[in-house]
Amino acid sequence: MKHKTLDLAAEIRRASLPGHLAGFLFPVFEATSNSLHSIEDKYGEQAHELGFIKVEFNIDTNSIAVEDNGEGFSKDNLDAFLTPFTGRKLKRNGKGFGRFISFKIFSRVFYTLPTDFEDGNRRNAAFEYLPLSTGENLDEIDDISLIEPHKRDTGLTVVFREPKEDFYKFFDFSNESFEEGYTEETILIAFLDHFLLEFIQKKTPRNFLFVIGGVKFNLSEYFSESVEFQGEKVVFLELEDESEEFTLRFMQIDAKKLKRHSLYFYADNRATSDLENISKGLKDTAFEGDKRNYNYLVAVTSPFFKASQSRDKIENLGIKIQHNNKEKTLKDALAAEAKDHILDLEPAYTGRRRETIKLQVEELIALDPMLRRGLGEQSLDEFVNNRGITESREQLAQDLFITRTRLRGKFDFRKINSQTSFEQLKNVVRNRISADAKEALAVYVAYRNDVIRVLSEMLNRKDDGSIAKEDAVHELIYPRYKDSEEIDYSSHNLWLIDDDLAYAEYISSDRTLISPT
Image (cartoon, rainbow, N blue to C red; front, side, top):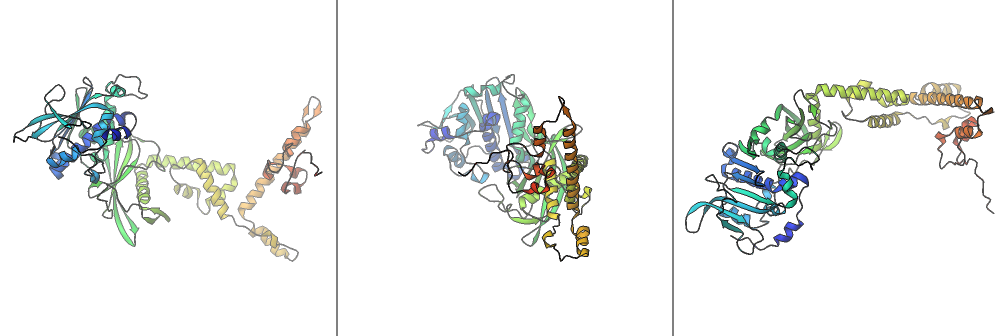
């Protein structure tokens, strides 16, 4: 059996793989994904109950086998298998090229399955896959040491053998070259992570077995043990003058099996997006439970979602809507709703974070009383409750300063002249100078007093029987050999000599003027 002509060798050379373990497992992920599709095609909505997959990781023979009970090779999908880039996988967000990249990891790939032959007989046959062969690409073999016969009436088994030199280490769990601990569970977690959405939506068979080092695991049960459902939240958002309903399902998943707080969208009971990281503004690390640490996974669906049929994406997540008095994309609005509800589900964490933010704001105001004006008409508690739960001290200070500046009332003192009445002058001082400006004046006066105290100490201090060095006083008032381009007016103390000098357009300290001639 031969495929159509294509420079596959060049395509394989150009192909790139994810690094580390994910790259090594890529061919096995592809084979498992094909098994899931084959089972779905055969059993439809009963795929979860009737399907079967077994992945066997053999550390003695350095081989990996994937067995399923799907529809196997029909004439149509065999032709597609032997022909690269048919477009058959596009509806499932694939390219139909993954099986060729297997040869970047392994030297030999075998298939065994029930096969109808031209003589009318049907028997279990084994083949070696030779994509670069000028002859048959599926070469029948009878060496059971290379691949055992397929054990089921339908479906197929694929075996990857003879890993390339760089990949032998992944079969050795005692290898100390890995930076982090590498165990059998590392492989299980990698599979769970890769097929997380399929497990969540029960697109995987109930009988999804994984055998590693002779020990058998049921991955579906392994996943179920790590998940706790935390209920649903229904929200209504105004879109295009219509109120649309969105349902959010919340799950807590063991932090080993879900690396970060995530969200995904689905339509027509099928995931139509990759996982979205929603840790920012929520919590950078996992929540700590009594028995385990966990991250949240939120699944969002709605009749409003329109899924593209050629790619598993939702087409209308990018539309702009008004949400909490801000313009956002629908995706961002739903992410915000998800994070808000997670915070409701974690009152202990939320309370601790609010207390921390409150202490930080109090410290900022103590350091700079003018920042209190940044609270506006809100109480401190109201301000804190309106902040993002993970905002840093720097973000809080910046927002307080910006709000203070925006709220600060300005009065044009240039309007005051000889015609201004005494009552008007009195009113300006009492009512037209903002509290913010009065606080600034108080801070400035206090600063001047502190500088004068420092200067007095310098002048009174003795050093080897003489008065403080001139250089020290000079540095306090205005550093030598500097000018206005290097020293900002707010950073010197020339007002000690003359207040008018504090705001001079240009000042140069101890610099020789060069004559134009």
